[in-house]
Image (cartoon, rainbow over the protein chains, first blue to last red):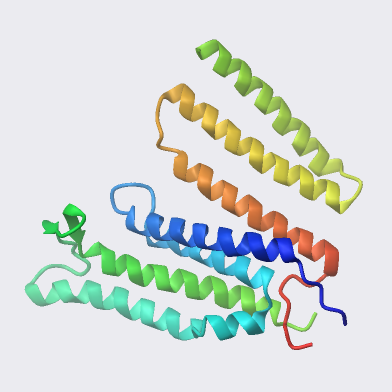
Length: 142
Length: 92
């Protein structure tokens, strides 16, 4: 079977993929007080990865991004649950969130919350689940 | 300004209707794909006009998300129409 090489699509993907990844990281950190957060950030990252898989083939992307998405789901769930449990050691209910303001070197005064690691767990679960579903369907013999 | 925005919104809704009609009756698959892509772009313009009329930038994230999803959806369907295989296996 002759391989078709969509050159324009490759060039566009190399630019657009990183724009979408940057936007997903922005959405991830814009959460809690603005629209955004782990779920939609994870979906945007998954769509950037889907764009990479569409443009190149599955084998070369597997070489470039050697993540096991099953383990990614497990690690994300563990991070979320542990974040919730840590508050229980200090006598607060499960999943109590704390926040405070700190002076960071570049960002100035920043609000740091314990919802961020929880959101990181959700992010990993969403990316892992979406990519695992799409790749499992794609590898099915049609 | 308000009048101009309302006229523009009315014209955009007519355009969305025409795109929906083409997506419903389109004789071939390619017509439907192009109609849906144009509908996505129309939605982006629609949200931009709504942002202007409300004097806010709160919906700018929505514009970006719709743009990304419309692009990836169009690319995936185009690849499906062309070859029948959306994700190449890479082992042939």
